[in-house]
Each structure stands twice: as C-alpha cells, then as structure tokens.
Amino acid sequence: MKIAITGAQSTGKSTLLRYLKQDDDLKGFEFIDELTRKIAAKGININEEGSNMSQIFTVTIHAENIVKDHFISDRCALDGLVYTKWLFDQGKVDKWILDYAVGVAKEVIPRYDYIFYLPAEIPIEDDGVRSADVKFRDEIVALFEMYTKELDIKLIELTGAVKDRAKQFKRVLEPKLYSTVDLKEVISLSELSAIGNDTDKYLTDAYNYWVENGYNKLDRAKIYLSNSGGNAGWAFVREDCGDWKGDNVHLSRFTVEFKGDGLGAKMFNSLKKKYKKITLWSNPEAVKFYERLGVRFTDETTEVDGSIYTYGYYE
Image 1 (tube, one colour):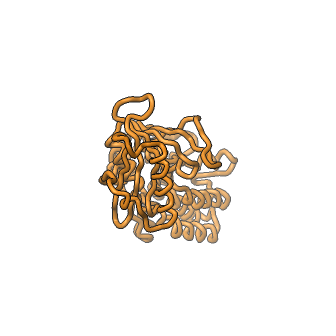
Image 2 (cartoon, one colour):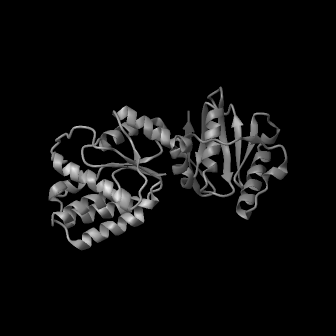
Image 3 (tube, helix red, strand yellow):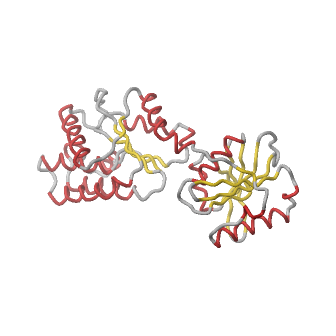
C-alpha cells in the first residue's frame, strides 16, 4: 500500500508518523520522513523563502517515492503542488516550476492508496525549521482546499490527539491489514492442480518434497487451500515443528495462482489467527512481502538451489 499523511505545516504530521512507527501492526511499512529538513540541510531555503531549486527537489522526491511498494509518507505530491503554488503567487518560483508540480501531482496522486489529511487544529510550534507564521499556514490550508476540489482528491481527515488520529488511521486500514480467508485442508491431489504451468510445476515439486520427507503420512503436516475471486492459494505447513512447542506452525511451501490481488496476505493472516507462532525460510523475492505482514527475519541463512533463504518468524 502507498499511504501519505498530508496537510499544512504544524498540523502534527511528523508526530503522527513517529507514533505509527511504534505500532507492531505497521512494522512492514517503510516510513518516509518529511523531506523539508533534508532540503534545508543542503543549504537550500525552504518555507516562505522557497525557490525554484527547493521545489525541484521537493516535487521530484515525491515523484520518486511513489514507485516504492509499501510505505507511509510524511507529505506527498499534493504538498509539493500546494507550496509551489503559494511560492508562485509570491513571485518566488517560475511558471514552469508550477507547471511541473501540477503535472507531477496529476500523475502521482491517483497512485496513492490512501491520503490522510490533518487539519490545522493545533497551535503552531516554532522549532527553528518550520514556519511559525499563522497567516502563511492559513493561506496554505486554503490552497489545500482549492486543489482537493479542483483535482477531485479523496482525503481522509484525522482529528484529535495523536492517539485518536492513530486509531482513526488504523480503522481505515484495518480491512487490508487483517483481512482473512478460509483455509480448507487438501484431501485430494486434484486440489493441487493449477491453471498456469509455473504454478502447477511448483505444486508438483512441493508435493514431491512432501512425500520424500514423509510429511504426507503425518497428521501434523497439512496442506491448506484457499479460493477467492477466481484465484487459488496453497500453504504447506507442519504443526509443532522445532524446539518451540504449542500452537505453532512452520510454513514449508506457499504460493498463489495469481499474484497481486491480496490472496497471499489473506492466507497468511488466516495462519496468524490460527497459530501463535509461524516460522519460515524466505527467498529474497518474498522477504518484503513477509515483512509487511509482521514477519521478523534473523541473520540465519541457508542456500537452496543457488538461492539464499533467510529464516524468519511471526509471533
């Protein structure tokens, strides 16, 4: 998911981002801090003294960030447009810079899954970096309102203390964070057939591995199947595996027919509800997927068919 927290200066965006960083349910997200301070550290003027250079950096960074897979960002392309427009109205940036900001905003804003807006409901705090000018903030708020209507942007407003804002934030994300799907135990080999050749081969190899190790004869070794919206997924698991005893499971093999529709995440969430601890070995391509779902990885690795697998666990 691509998520941004937007709003005028001194509305609590950075405070909320710091608070969300401590939430275990959001550990898989990349948190992108406010870039204004980084720009100021380069010796480039910001806030009311912004320029062509400051806005080139700002707008371009927002465009670059959108290609990331799974993040929560302090500010977004809408902020870049709003502040560029204010500077243009003051004669501090050229028209081509404003045109650039408009173009980036129109291209990038639809790519966010959620944009949360913080209204100007708290006093301005002068920290030596952000502007403490109330009039400036009011004018920025007006520009946010203007562009939200003009570009038909759906903003989700968060209000109250930081804890209240965090609860509202998670309430919106909850369906995607915790969505689950039914896990049906496979009882017939016909349920291990897929449409695509690659998935079909994966399932054949996985089952051969299952038989070679005698897992098919163990009650605690199970293969789960899930179906959703024309997609199918399979999870090969072994219960009470390893030194840790109790309601735990080792995820031995895991795949879905069609990637990208969220079925894999729903299946993993279902396993999280069913078991207290899940262990697994992940190839490099799947590490980020598992991290988004709360898996923590260790330094322990192993090599399988030329690929390095890393040991991870969820509990």
